[in-house]
Image (cartoon, rainbow, N blue to C red; front, side):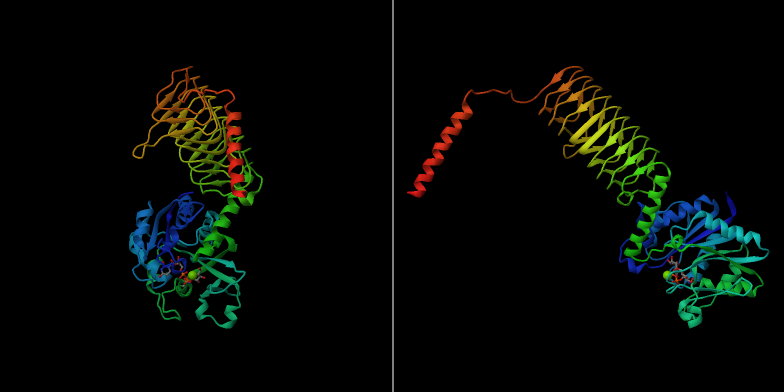
Length: 455
Ligand code: UD1
Ligand code: MG
């Protein structure tokens, strides 16, 4: 549903010092996608009128990596309230509601955001909706103090809280919806007269109430609010993402023999009746059609695997690998930027790069396409029904015709015509009895040297 009356403001000006990273905290990936992009993609489903990203530390990293948002700069990190104040010029002339989110809290679901909007619409004169959660370990979160009438009275920051307030486990996620038209005035009323000396966004609760507006809250589950401040929290966010991706895959009809060992990317597309054996990793951009089996220890990235194909074990599909229907890619095979038609077999120990292979061709063990001369890359074409003997090197550019055979151990530098045999290797020649004579001679030499030593 489109929300022309809504703007999203995403705070990402904090320093993220605990990550100990040159990369901005919110650009660290989960499932191969930046944390903040997970959030931006969710926000985009609500179709707000505007999305403003508040940047400070390492701002240029965000402005160059992120598209489709307005940027607001907060030079000094004077608190969450100040960060939202900094976003206001970017919202000049907009008087709709403002949803404040944190760039490092990436997995807030669209339906949670929607329920905050619904809550605001449902109550007359509702000025704020705060997203809260019951924390297992409330630690330093701000506490939500709810009055006897069920409305939110105030938010107390941990640093400012009394012992009784610290005992409350209903916590502030930091995510807040501010009613249109009031935001500018209320934000101006914030002060930094508190234990941290910061402009707390949370003080809007008291300010809104004093202005006679209602303050509501919505509750969500703690796992929706996973935040990332350290590498260990990044790993926890990745784990949560992977758990969800595995559940989604299985719910979509995919068999995961050992789900906890399979790793997905944010954009992995798997059809139903795909089977995935243990220890398979999907990089970005993989699409797998129905009936495919991906055997143990395979790594796929930027590849499409068509109906009924079989991949692995120990196979590597690199970007722009297109594996045809019913094709078979076996162990220790690497395929890059190559299109394999239906029924092609590359069963053992091969590198295929910058290549097209016609229907039902059989590529023998150890075949290598030599696609690179140290300066440029060249293409190989192998025709339909061709048979490439084991341990062959196809030196690109080269074209092996339909139905052609390449003799095992060949180094092909020239094209082979349709249905021809191409061989390029020394002719075999046998010397009768040579091996027996050789052994006898060598044994005699060995015996002589032994008796010399002993003597
Ligand atoms: C804030 C809330 C607290 C809540 C907690 C949830 C306030 C005053 N406190 O705590 O009630 O329980 O979040 O995690 O709002 N940021 C800026 N500019 C700043 C300060 C922060 O952009 O000047 C951004 C950070 O990058 C981060 C988010 O705001 O994404 C939260 O900042 P953080 O310092 O973690 O908030 P707290 O004050 O700890
Ligand atoms: Mg914090």
